[in-house]
Amino acid sequence: MKSNIKIIKGIHPGIILERELKQRNLGKSRFAISLQEFPQTLVSITKGKRKMNTPLALKIEQALGIEEGYFMILQIYHDIEEEKRRQNTEHPDFTKLRSILFWDTKMEKIVWDKQKKAVIKRVFERGNEIEKKEIVRFYGKEVVNEILKLHVK
Image 1 (cartoon, rainbow, N blue to C red):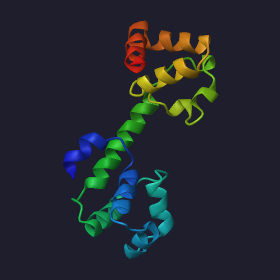
Image 2: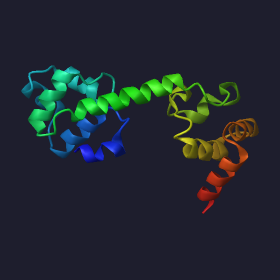
Image 3: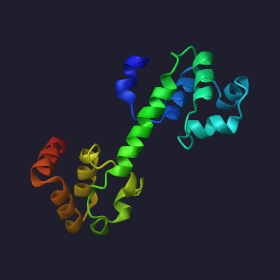
Image 4: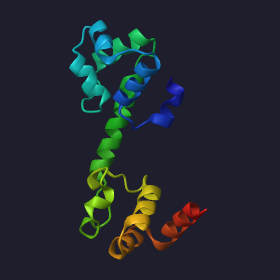
C-alpha cells in the first residue's frame, strides 16, 4: 500500500480507513469493538476529527493485513500539511471576498495555491467585479487567463 502514499499524502488517515472499511464491508462500530476500542474513537478518526495514534494504527493494520506503519505515515503527512497551512499566511484579501462565495468551506481552510483552479473558476462564475479583481491581483493575470482558457472548452 505504500506505493499509493504519494497520491494520498496529506489526506487524513481516517478518510483512508473509512474507505478501506467500506470496501471490505466492515461496520465501524463492530470493527472498533473487535479491536477492543470505543466505537466513538474510530468514528471520530474516520471523520478526520481526531488523530490516529500509534497503538490504534498498529491494531488496525494488523486486523486488516495492511503494512505496519501505513496509517502513521499518513498521519505524519497530514500533520505536515496542516502545519504548512497554518504557516502559509498568503491568501487573497478576505475583506474583498464574500464568504457566501465559498459556502461549502471556510476560506481559512482553503489551500489557495493547490486549489487555485477551483477558486478561480468559482469566483469567475459566481463572483462580482471586486472579487474577480482581487483574484486577478492575487494569482496574476497570466495564471487566471490560462485557467479560464482551460475551462472554456
